[in-house]
Structures are given as structure tokens and as C-alpha cells.
Length: 315
Image 1 (cartoon, rainbow, N blue to C red):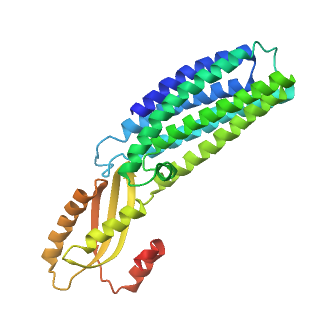
Image 2: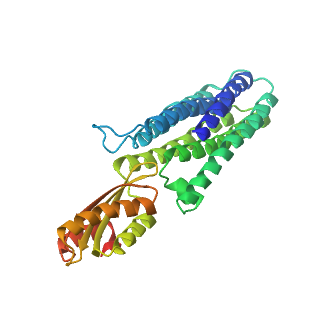
Image 3: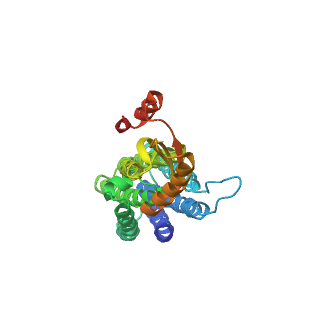
């Protein structure tokens, strides 16, 4: 939440100064960046809603809790970047290329604002990257891998937003400089369109991430493998036929496992073992929240084929 709040405050301040500078310099690039920051502010409000709603406890209608609300609101945040930021940037760029711009004021105002905005965005990005590092260490993976496929889309959203903001400021500055040197408004319009393209790429990447999580993405292959190994170590288990997982929210994993119990294990012992497996996995893996065990024969080829179709290593 602190990461999102810092990003919101930074983007709110930056949006105002970008808009003022954009009007004073008649810069399409700076106005596109102002729209970018307004979109980011709306995005952060959605992310705050995602964090708050996803923490609601389970209830009769939602027995697995509300963890996936984080993915839904994060998806809306991504669509906001596309609609507000990219949409306005396209309009501003096309209008500038076709009709030119009004008389511009002193361009140095734009340069000052770009430098100040970049410094502010760097503060927010530093906080987001620090949070991503913490999360990647907890997941035993690299920062790049975690940002690519996170279980918490809010961190990825802020990292990509702030990174795109810094790149966008560079594009706006380049457009402003090219216009000043050549006297041609075309370059400022091109900069606005480049910013729009950047925002489209960011929005589509965030949509992909949240859509995958909403549909029901499995936990990391490493975690799935370790869960299978833990079950195979239990004395009552003769073979682990299949392990399937699903992310129910950030740091919340549902585990469904098919195991073949040893022949000498009675039905009563198997029942008690299933309860113990839940505690064993919950204590060993902090993200495991729900565990369902299904006893099956390891000789059933149909089950093994179905497991191998999803997890080849289950062969």
C-alpha cells in the first residue's frame, strides 16, 4: 500500500506541473505526459481499491475469500492507462501533426518541468523496485522474473508505470528539443504518438498479467515441484500421481493433489493423513492456504495421461 500511495502522490503533483508546462510551451508531448500522469493517478486509485478489497475475509458466497479482486481491479487499472493515457496522447499527437500548435512560450519551462518530473518519478520507481526485490526474494526468483510473472500485479503495475513515465519524459523532451531546433511542430506530435505507443505496450502487458491470474494461473513450477516432493516424503504415500495449484490471490495458493496411498494404509489412517498433509504443507510453504487430497491408484493410465498433459514431468 505504501508503494501505491507514494506513486499516487508523485503522479498527482507531476500531472499538475506537466499540464501547466504543456499549456505554457504548447507542447503536445508534455500534454500527452500530463494525460499519462492523470491516467496513472486513476490507476493508483484502482490499485488501492484492489489492495483493500482483496483483504476481505471469506464468506458463504466466497468461501475462498476475495483474493482475486486484486486481479480484477488491477485489470481495470491497466485499461485506464490504455483509455486515458494512450487515447489522449493519440489525439494530441494527430491534432498537432495535422494542425500544428499555438504560439509556444519559452521552451526552458518545459525542460525544467521534465527534469523535476523525472526526479519525482525516480523516487516512486525506487520504492516500487525495492518492493519488487523483497517479493522476488520471498519467491526465490530474480526481480526481472518476478516482474514478468508476479503473483502481486500491483507491484508490477507501479514498476511499469514509473518506468514508462521516465521513458515518456525523455520522448517529450526530445520532441520539444526537435521542435525548438527545427521550428517544425511535427516533431512534437511524433513525440506524443510515441508516448501513446509506449502506453499501449504497458497497458497490454498489464492486461496479459491480470487476465492470466483471473483465469487461474498455477503457482510457480518450483513451488509445485516442492509440494509434490513433500507429499512423496510422507510415509503413507506410495506415489504422487498429480499436483495442481491455482493462485487465489497474492500469497494464497490452492493445492489439489492426487496421491496413491500405500496398500497397508487403512481408510481411517488415510483420512487422518489427509488432515496432516494440510498442516505439513501449510507449515512448510507460507503461500499454501487450501489443500485437497484425492486418493487414486497410480496404475490408472487415464489419470496419468491427464496429469502429463498439463505437467509433462508428471509422466
